[in-house]
Length: 502
Image (tube, rainbow, N blue to C red; front, side):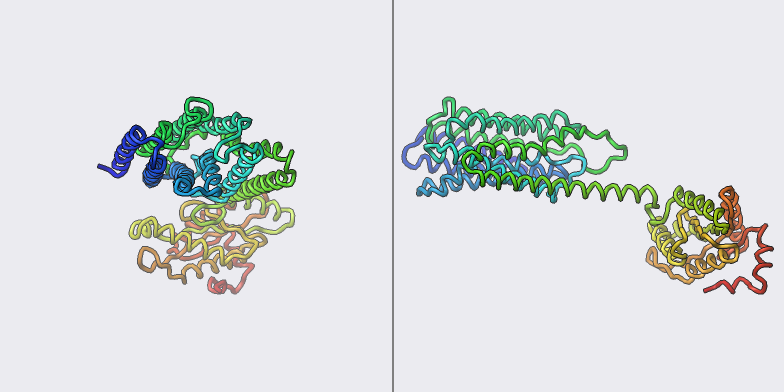
């Protein structure tokens, strides 16, 4: 039998023992103490089940169960203080346990802020700010529900705030149910839908304790069985939980759920703080101002963090749209746009623009013998080597496959040839480690020049033709445009190929 089912079976046996205890002993003698100890033990079984459910989950579901674990961990602290209070009355333990019992669900309510499309299962800075907001809600709620009404008992709500308390509880459970209804993910619908229904049921049981037949019952009496049942239900939910969807990115993008509903959940905590602070301000203006001020700081910080992430995402998208993902150079579209822009500028300034088409020699053999991963490493190193040899105002882009394009403004055929030789000799002198062995890589380069905006296609075709001529000529060499080679030789009298080496 699996551990979750073993824990569920042990919890069921313990609950049956609780039924027998209430029927036999009730509120007499040590009955209340033993009843509280049984509930504390059931809480331990529940937390163990939640931890196992988180271990079986990934992505948003894991974060959901982690938050649920924290919530019931707070409940266990309150129950432990209640057991301590049964042994000896401590005023601090009494009001602290009551506050934890009243607001244990606040960490669970933070699950409303989880994003099923991006959640990694970890709590980031936004979740930390939301947690601070939750703490402020607890602080404001304690003052609002317990301190200001001046109830006769530290462990019971004053009658005048019963309705607002259950209204806030209903708001959280309703938000869970709404989140489950609008979600596209099956797992999200199950998690939020079932937990929302359970929270609504739990709120009804609390209302029965204050308004209905449970009113006036003492620890150890029959209503303790209701509290115990409220621990068994989430334990069963955690036991039967099985994640049906993988958080991995699908090959085909799914339509995203309407985010407007999710964004509304971030207003719950600040609105609750503001609502309760209006009442607190009647008697303690400074305390209300402090709570509202801290809530405003958290909301502003959350806005700034979100804005910073949006700017980073925008910058990443801009770079992804303009750069090749493998080499980091300009991509095909952008390098052609740069060529057109430089030719327009060159026509205006009456300066030629050098165009160099580069192809890696025998690159297919690298992929075939060492694998495509090694081929990617080789391409990245070559791209880095080419970028290191050009001038700061030159542009390098990946033209396609193992081909690169260099744009050199202000370079005639001779200067372009010199730049191409500098690139060729640098790459040829590199010893690249890929696939567990050294790889010697050479380049074939074709050069051409353009002078007007109308020369874009002509210059590209000329450089491409010259590059294939370099391959036919034995590779690892630079070839000029055929129709301009003679004029280049006349303008550079006495200069041979080796004169351009660095």
